[in-house]
Length: 417
Ligand code: ATP
Image (cartoon, rainbow, N blue to C red):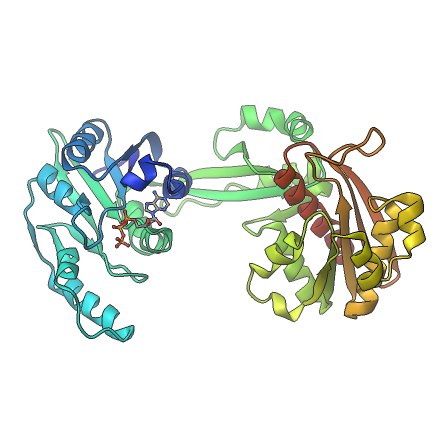
């Protein structure tokens, strides 16, 4: 087997160089490659210029087993990645009939009968490549083998638009990579909230340091602490992760909200669905973020009733029935106001649970008594009335995101029992 180990990424596009678009493809691909157990050593961004692109590909091929390219597969003049791959590999471009048919079908399905001539350019692929179908667009991708002195290396060409790239990678490239490598990676994510990163690390440090296979390592995540258990295994080897996961549960189990891939909003949604209960939100400083993030996940309509963005104090009183004297005496960022917001929201939305968030996200508005980052989160539910004060650090939007996460968790804790 031709083992591939060293990978790198080249993202093609002058828009990327000019900062007009953010290179999310590189971040996404790098994460996926690491989960697949490939080593990523370099990332390059190069504009739509044939000489520089060709030079970048040649340099990457010299030092890596597989080079992933994104962008520049479109129909226009400045889309040159396939041509560059053809030149570097010495494989001439030739018409790939199934891709031509797929492009026609794609346009027909969208009511366009006439396909412009330049669209056929996208069906021209290097001779002897593995074509990769595009189920979210027109440009096919390709895996192009390149002869090196000892072994073959590969170029993997993917489209620029993230929705096309992600699907093509998952559908076609992941199975191909799995065939090229002997060892597979089994990953288990352990997601915790309410524990500081350093405290978690201290409690798990000996496992991080001692474990060889499976390994344990922290995984960067905002507002929560995530550890990744990884077993590297040959085909048909048994799962060895159980004892390590059990040991982690024994040490920090009370903070764990998920062992697996679900994010906090998904866990909350699933808890509510399982218990057949509904929720609503009253939000001040998060401005609808808690509602919005939750609605990003399918199936939430079964449990989410609605919400009120009560930014101004008059909205807190008029729409949520918060007693103005509460705001006068205690302030809008107070336990009393948060509880009253949740209470008013639950009554008006007729939901089993209501969660409120009120706080100072900054950068202005802080006082000595209530500095920026002071947030009150409250929950009202069947026989439940609870609240927490958060003291968050960071910039405005980070504070808003973490407050949202903590608000989800406050109600989740009542739903798991
Ligand atoms: P198309 O067939 O749509 O022309 P393409 O493969 O030629 O696709 P580009 O023309 O390079 O891709 O980019 C198309 C769009 O894809 C860009 O305008 C941008 O929105 C997105 N895109 C491209 N590269 C990246 C990247 N590295 N990260 C995030 N988005 C990207």
